[in-house]
Image 1 (cartoon, protein in one colour):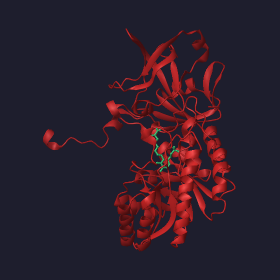
Image 2 (cartoon, helix red, strand yellow):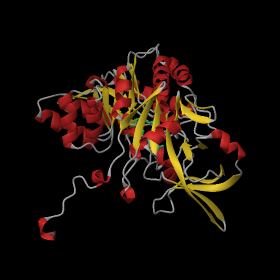
Image 3 (cartoon, helix red, strand yellow):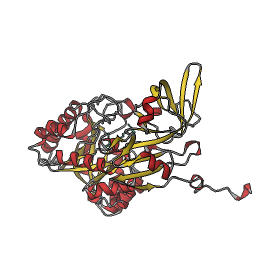
Image 4 (cartoon, protein in one colour):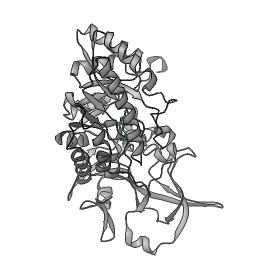
Amino acid sequence: MPDFRYQDGELHCEAVPLRAIADKVGTPCYVYSHATLLRQFRSFDSAFNEIPHLVAYAIKANSNLALLRLLAREGAGADIVSGGELYRALQAGIEPRRIVFAGVGKSDDEIRYALKTDILMFNVESSAELRAIDRVAGAMKMKARVALRINPDIDPKTHPYISTGLKKSKFGISAERALEEFKLATTLPHLEIVGVHKHIGSQLTQVSPFVDALKKILLLVEQLAGIGVRIRHLNVGGGLGIIYQDETPPQPQDLAQAIAPLVKDLKCMLIFEPGRSIVGNAGVLVTKVLYHKANPDKTFLIVDAAMNDLIRPALYGAYHEITPVREARDKLKKRVLADVVGPVCESGDFLAKDRMMPLSDPGELLAVMSAGAYGFSMASNYNSRPRVAEVLVRGGEFHVIRAREEYADLVRGETIPAFLN
Ligand code: LLP
């Protein structure tokens, strides 16, 4: 993570010591690098310069308004999966005609909201949804632009919870049923078919599943041309992996090299939906050591961040490197095999398991690395823990882009009915 480096024995984000941020805003807090975000977005976007394309950032990875605005200013579109994400995208200034809407369970309200704002298209996941969008668009006297999400049944070779393109997955329409569903779509008067969509999974570390899936989709595009359906947008989804530990994920240029020859004669705009590869390595979670605890079989480093702040280790057994913010003192420290755990009352509440860690003293700071994607966006208030602050660093300055929640925020919207008074 080039923008998170030790300088004078202290871990910095760009030119700001993480300690200075922790002193000002407290811990735990997420810290993001403006430079990394820009670089990641630009390197993705420019890799596909030769192909007409749109980079629709997957908002679910990190939906903070400041980050969205930064990406909007770079010309990013958005991949959304809810009315709430649409609201955020619009608030951040992302152009509606650069927004695509996926997800297996869109409600009538969400469909109406998206039609009213004139988004680029819906990525439709079933025939029931085709009919629902047609019905809602009809009632609004509109035509809805749709792409059908096809499940190409390709193994993305990633964690089962983040694999979406296999037959047994709830996502998309099976390749065998695709033509039939497209035919149905042509009969529905309030739909305009504009595209095909696929997304096979997340944290992919090889190019081949992307290529195999795309080949399947291209066959379908040919078949569709045969029945008079011309595809203008080909959405290849997101999923490019990042380095958490020792992975060697392809770079956007590798992906571009692999797919450009396949699509060069296609008169089509390509849409990409990267999330993790844009923000994953742009953020860390800073946490403070509270206690050490040595049980007969195990040493625990108890920190103030927990699974409600970063659920990836608990949910997927995901690996996040954890490094002390103060480097110099660390060198003097003995290392122990420890679990790094939070205060939440669950045995699954850990940030690292059986990890060789310097035995940082209580009060010292640790940085949980590669936490920019699916970190804050998956945070909850479990155990009535206020959600943490988010900070954006740009060069030598830092800005709080989301205030730490207060206790009053925890009960906002709750009411005690009069009969309990
Ligand atoms: N497009 C669609 C339709 C998606 O479902 C996803 C992610 C993306 C794009 C973005 O994928 P990315 O480029 O970020 O890999 N919470 C999990 C990841 C869930 C991904 C869900 N879909 C995690 O923390 O690893």
